[in-house]
Amino acid sequence: MRTDVAVIGGGIMGCAAAYYLAKEGFEVVLLEKNAAVGLEASGRCACGVRQQGRKGALQLAMASVRVWSSLPQELEADLEYVRTGNLKIVWEPEKAAALESETTWELSQGLAGVRMLTSAECREVVPGITETIVAGKLCPTDGMANPMLVVPAFGRAAARLGVRILTRTSVTGLLTLGSSVCGVTTDAGEIEANYVINTAGPWAAPFNEQAGCFTPIRPGLDTLIITERQPHRFTPFVGFGWWGYILQPKSGNIILGLEEKTNEAFSTQVDYAELAIKARDMIQLLPWLGDVAFLRAFSGITEYTPDKEPYIGVMPGVSGYYVACGFSGQGFCLGPMVGKIISELVTGREPSVSLEPFKPDRFATDQIHREPL
Image (cartoon, rainbow, N blue to C red; front, side, top):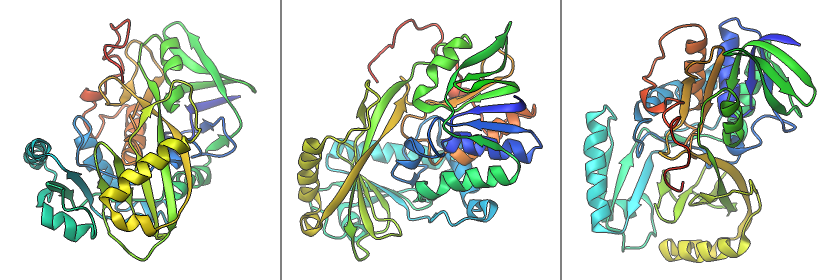
């Protein structure tokens, strides 16, 4: 088989890249090892569309939120996207001071509306939360969307433009000719391509290494707990730092997300003993949760880089090969804009957002991970 572009991975990055490349007129084949797109981290995340709390990716997130505003119309699908706001809550005075500094910096970078909240204001926003909180930080233009709707919607929109989505097809390696990548090998045969886009998430690093660049990525585990449906309790996506986060999407269920942890086994197994401990901790923060039934839990495999910033762009010294991976559990918001940027790069245009913080070769001289992820 031959195509203009081969995309490795059917998460939000791969489906968005395929869609925007097809809009540019490219013939695109998207390769996904699972039975459908969006079944890994992109479909198992907590649905936050967040700008605040980022470092190198702040401008990228701000640009992506602008894309999100019209994305349901563009994809002709209900994504359950809404700007609910994102609230970060802290209990320690020193962490409140850090949030103050973060707020000042973000405002200087153009993130309008982000502001500090007092303890009393946080309790108004999240009724019933413990009075021991010290302060919070709210970004009203942040929000959430349903990941189980978003990635399939990108896939359908891409397919309408002619993208061939090959599911149950695992990429096993790259086809190379000198310093050029000219396609991929799969468990179903070879696919020649003028351009290859690596959006393989936790599985991306070996392909990058075959292309000649060391991009350390380690797998993580993200676990979500789903409760029974509740009357409206609170609006924003609420982050608790050391514990995790909580939100109430359109369905009315409460979603509790645990802080990510390392996952060298690439496992999706839920640790129910840990969940019981975490649930008790959360009930201490929000006592009304003690009267809510917890229905189910599931885990997804996330990915982490040493500096928690992704790899996005052209692989230096290699022609025909582009990467968008290593999003460190924070890629859902960025996906639409990253897809646009990949299409800009392939067509030879300057990217809409600077990719300086995301250079794929920034760890190329490292022989080992400089610190645990």
